[in-house]
Figure: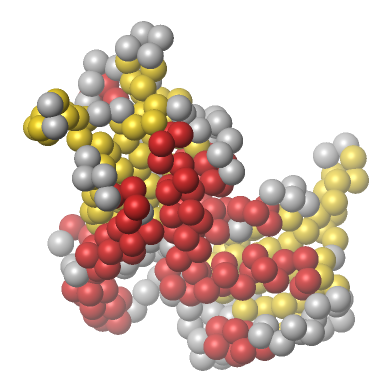
Length: 314
């Protein structure tokens, strides 16, 4: 029960930022939009942290100025993001001063909503569609009430024990044609992670090594992207619709093998949302290669051959 301690700790702001950047990835591809994670001692007790979506323009010489945006620009991104945020972080939906709220700030007024009310009003296609907004702010609790958190943790943990089978069934259904070839193996495991009381899931795809139609125990055969992409790409489409993808943690390969290669673009967590155990034929070696899962869906820059694909999500 080593994770019990975490539910009494303050919210991990770095993890929250990663969560926001992953779930608003398409919107944040526009560099004018940004997410800010702010403490709110000036407004409410330090129990609260705010997530602020705003838009800025560059005035030159490094000077930035906040500008306005319309609901029509952000609706398709913000609504799924708020749903995922509500699933994974603690909202207080009372709408009172001692609870977290969703605030929409316009030029001359500010409106605050509980989660339930916000989800009802945004169903209206005309809601604020062309009105100018200065920012959208979402208030999260920065700490927890011990008894409530403990009960939520135990409830979530007990429910999660059987949920690996549900996730495996989801993956197996969308990869059914590929898994008809019984040499392909799908593995689903779970692990408690960070501030959340829900588990992270790890899905990996490998292929058994065979000789004379017999499986060689412990052996892994190469997987060729051209052979599986027609099944894997639609699966990844469905996965990012149903779950929140997490950045993969970089593995210290020196602890696993004699190789120490890690290949990734930069420290942007979006560029580590899928991991390949890539085969390098030029020197008969392998490495862990990280990519943005969206580029894999677009079939851009995917390794031609590898031993494993792994994805982490919740």
